[in-house]
Amino acid sequence: MALNFQSILSAYGINNQLEVSPFGTGLIHHTYIVGKQPQFILQQFNQHVFKNPSEVYQNVYEANQYLIQNKAPIKLIIQKLTHNKQPFFISENSYWRLFDFEKNSFSNTKVVYASQAYQAANQFGKLTYHLSGIEINKIKHTIPNFHNLEFRYNQFLQALKQSKPNNECKTVIEFYKSQSALLNAYYKITSDNYLPIRIMHNDTKISNVLFHEKTNDAITVVDLDTLMPGYFFNDLGDMIRTYVSTTTEESDNSAPVSMNPEYFKALWHGYKDGLQNSLTQNEQNAAQYAGPILIYMIGLRFITDYLNNNRYFKINYPLHNLSRAINQMQLLQCYYEHKPQLNDILNA
Ligand code: GN1
Ligand code: MG
Image (spheres, protein in one colour):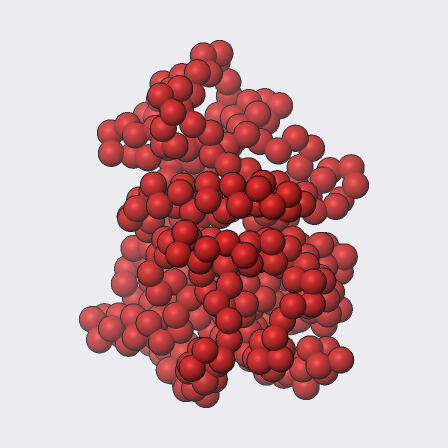
């Protein structure tokens, strides 16, 4: 079906002809940029992944209201309302949403220097910090069990039962089965109120941070769909996973994966400063598990999706999710090799 972008844009009162082209690297929604000089970001929202779109909107709305009321130094980019005052334009069972394009901004798929890691982490720390007083039940779980490692591990076991993995992925599967130490660490740090529940972004990859074209300073974070109550290590771990690796999760496994400890240090300091040094002693102690748990968790999600015939993440070729799972496996192995040095940075 040819998409009629003009009819979608006119639901927002935009009646002039604007160029619309695919944009970004997201694995869930279909994203487009509108205007030759970018004016808007248009998204076909994935309501199979986010089963309750209005809850996604409501969470961000509540968070934004709270930040404004408390004069927090954070500017969230909120989806625009249609001329009928609806957060989504619904057409033929598809949900669409529109955002203003942040002028003079850019995003990266990889950290290119240490202060970028600092700045990005600082933004995510600030977001959690300035939302720390919000009534927690105002923010709903848009995807239940999203960063629950036990749940993700069980999904993997279930997928294994229902599929006939070929030889190509035997070693990968064995690796993902062999990480019970991480599951134990996860149980330990998530039991008995050991860690406080905070409002987390839950998708802290570098492409979700906007930087200013002229100053290179971080402006804000985007992709607020998974803004949910959770643990600090969700965000810290996902930043370690994506900022410190010298290859991206999309690389084709031909280059060896390695880690940049300088970026690790920068993001850790940026994160703590953003949180105004409010991590508890238990959070500080648990920080050593953040990277491994998140690398393992997303790797499990990739291999699970591969075994389930790629129902969840967008893929460009049949073995794409397997390749992503291999990247995460190599990254976790690499983390273990660097562990003493990384732990020294966390404890300095
Ligand atoms: C997905 O939406 P996107 O592409 O920014 C995923 C994240 C993963 C990420 C891996 C809702 O994020 O959890 O970390 O891919 N989001 C959802 O690139 O599953
Ligand atoms: Mg996302």
